[in-house]
Length: 198
Image (cartoon, helix red, strand yellow):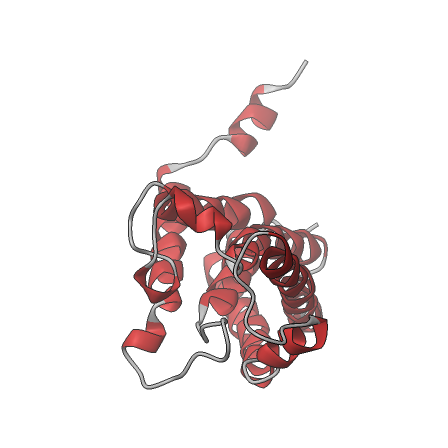
């Protein structure tokens, strides 16, 4: 039988809900940063800051709350709010070839949170962020490829190599931001102490 302490550990506090809401909002802003600054989309993939904020959510809030923040963001978008890239929204977005990246944001936040919950070193924060970026690219790109092949209208001469070529332009940006997220979150965590390090 679970103890009162165990129940309270899993219960969300008001401040937790506020942090989850904050990171969900940052995801919304990051999704459409290309509408504010003159970045360009490559092929069918818009260049955004969503990966950065998803990873930061896991690093700062931990596995459970970080993944929850990304889940809230996804649910808000599926409910119809124009919070996805290019101000997309609605349940129909689940058929978008790039929807897989949104799903992997949840997994990425959860995994980085798990890693840093077990080790509070700066190196672990950076390594966790880079691993999460790799997961996001691997699963998201494969989802996109199969979506184009199975139900979306694939561009002419589209193939697996082209799918990965589309992902190359934003890759350096995401690697640099992953390292920055690790360093920044490590410093922020020492101040906020949101995650109890084992």
